[in-house]
Image (cartoon, rainbow, N blue to C red):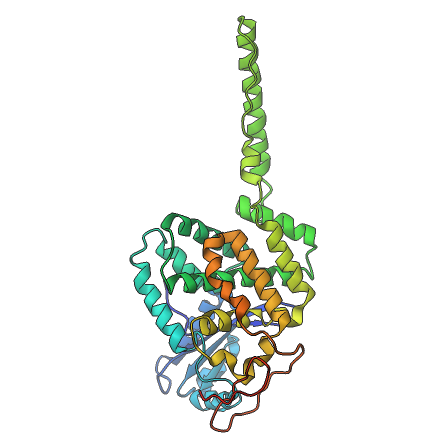
Length: 371
């Protein structure tokens, strides 16, 4: 690991096109280390294929601003961040992975529990919990499938590790499907299927060499078998036909879950205005609501809990079950019991609370609970 990312943001537009941004937060003042950090961030953006990188420092010098502009990096000082934070006063201060107390406690306990579960590879757990947010859809699907196989070997996972890892797996499936749904503008569904089949079997969506080579290997094997068979028959042996598995078919058979996954992709593409919110819905549902916190009930999140959001989320859960197995997905079945009862088309409430954040009850009326 070269470094960590202080803040990672994923934005999804109305055409389901994803963009990723990172923010690097430094506590230094003046020009000490400023140019080196800016130049380093330019390479960091290229390494991780990020769309936007922002440097946040207590102060940013005119020289630093000029260098940042030349390299396409946003540089902000502490005062600018404070002004921007005021525009988000309508959001709860803490929720889910943004320092939500229940989420933080569950993730910390999961760290401890994973040390006693040798069947779950540390690299795989790290991928699902962090690196997956930077991955493409085939890598995400392979990772979730590998996690399902690891759980089968390990056996029943203890709580909260089971819920935490299942929640990350669900987000990985949704992130993969959103990426592929955004590609349907430019790529026909038939071609998307073919590229996924290639990526999930031979490891490369554009590969045109492995399968033809395996076909030739099958032909060679048939030729040798026929020649050997004829020699035995010529020597007086009884003819015996033995079927052998095809190398090409053994490699090229697509995973059984592919139809369910593509169904999820097409459902997301058919309802982009709801689908674009689905990652945040899953984040709040899995890492706030199911873990026992209440920030997900905030009035500012009410627009994320409609029946349409619930329908797509449960389709994603069904897809997770097909990819990773029911043992992984079953711990998230309580998602169906959450009150997704806000009316469709509800505009996000971004009014600044006066000393408290008003929560909503399942019937949509204010609950008057303080955060």
